[in-house]
Length: 67
Image (cartoon, rainbow, N blue to C red; front, side, top):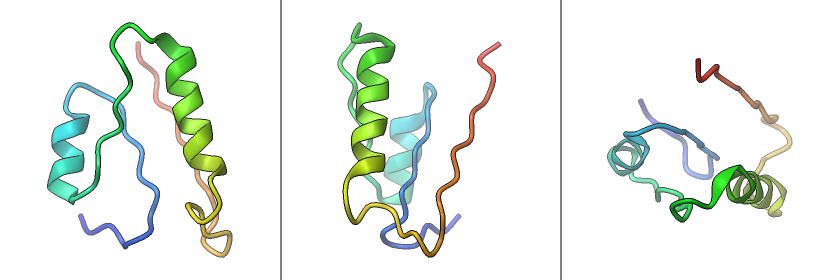
């Protein structure tokens, strides 16, 4: 997998930090026991920061069931 520079990549799961490291990306750090509010706050901050999303490419949000 090759990720273009400037791409916004978000992943969740037990191996997220390892995957980010393999891609040369920083892993997001959500403090333990912060709950969903901290996660949503981090995602919103990254999605609304000017320059993190190229409108010519578009934005895709994908959700997966945790069942």
